[in-house]
Length: 92
Image (cartoon, rainbow, N blue to C red; front, side, top):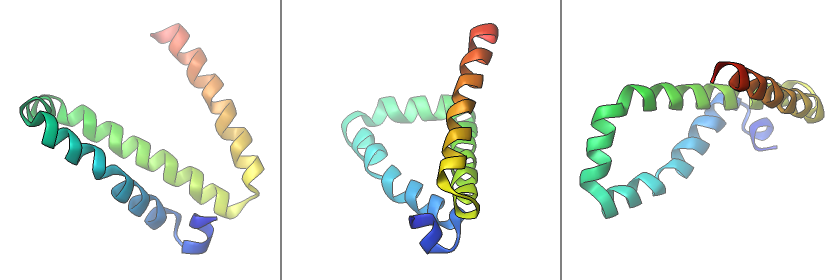
């Protein structure tokens, strides 16, 4: 409903990820500053790729939910989990 009312699934996704994603990194920096910064320096490309991929996939799902009934998109998203499971069984 939020994505439909906002008028832009991408804008809604970016604001959602920004506002919900701020507290945890701030808490981690406050409690374990040295560890977090060292890990981030070493693994930033992987973190960036994961963040872009997660944001893009969620934005695409929300956009699809603004175009067609939510049930259709939900069924497709759930079946994609089965494909991911099969791929991980054979490749990982």
